[in-house]
Amino acid sequence: MKRTKCSEFRQSLLSGLLALAVLVAWLAAEPVQAARLKDIASIRGVRENQLIGYGIVVGLKGTGDGKNEFTGKSVGRMLDKLGVKLENQDVASKNVAAVIVTANLPAFAKAGNPIDITVSALGDSQSLEGGTLLQTPLRAANEQVYAVAQGAISLGSGDKDRITTTGRIPNGALIEKDVQADFASRKMFRLNLINPDFTTAARTVLTINKELGGQYASAKDAGTVDIVTPFSYENRGVELLATIENINVNPDSRAVVIVNEKTGTVVIGERVKISKVAVSHGNLSVKVGDGKKSGPEEKVAVLDSGVSVGDLVQSLNKLGVSPKDLITILQTIKAAGALQGELEIL
Image 1 (spheres, rainbow, N blue to C red):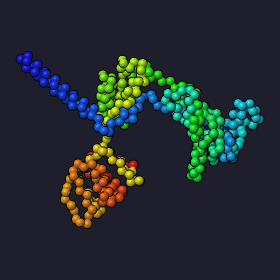
Image 2 (cartoon, helix red, strand yellow):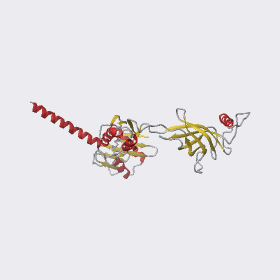
Image 3 (cartoon, rainbow, N blue to C red):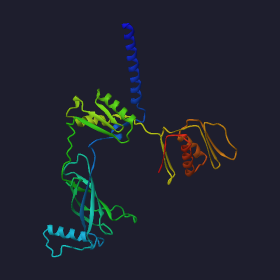
Image 4 (cartoon, one colour):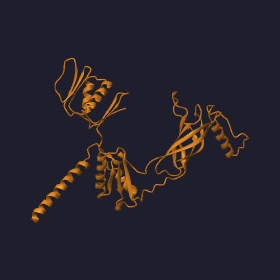
């Protein structure tokens, strides 16, 4: 009796291990389309921060704001800070313009590093060409100043259709405050998949655990993977992330066809298939899974059942089908339930 129970237990254990091995092999399979983890996921906390500021541009050739109230008062306050006392604080000049300055503060930015800025007219200025932005503090959402901008504005090429009320200043701001991010000693890191998918998340966990040699990664949902820092990487968070972000993972994708009706562009996912169906459109017949042809006056596309949308589009292109007709045919096939995937119309 004991031997029978022992045999049953062994058989059950072997069956369970076999099923687990099959699941692991399926999830961890990496075809040629494998991508680096750094290209399909981001590390939580590693991102840019937006900066904004209000400034004054001077040196314009009569294309400034003129008599705008906020511009005049801003110039008056600026002159007062520079030691120029005026009886009338509201200064009007067509050579001055009020502007909004924007920039992106990179992750791990350090004091003294330069960043590019964009300068945009706030009032009724006709052009910022030839102007110089005066010293402008740039603040984050927490109202703290992280950079200071100043410099000559560039509007780009001399194209007649260019926008002259917006310009850029390459390296036009200097970072004044370090962005604190202590990654070296962190005990846990979180990866956010750019395109959340349960299969991709499961494959990511299996691949990371295989690389690190233990159960350190776990998926919280279709778009989130948490990683506990292994003992061997303690206080070496940078090296750990460098190892993880270069791991190759095969991302899974939905079966989808995206159609842009305005341009006639059709983008097709590789997993989209078409079931048995017959479509008649004008003098065109499309038959999937039916080898019979129609009358001689009709253009006929005959395809085997289970073909991809790519095969269908290629066959229709050979028959000279217009993009508009192609879109109509795809919509009809989807409505009939024969297109195995999503159809998105832009």
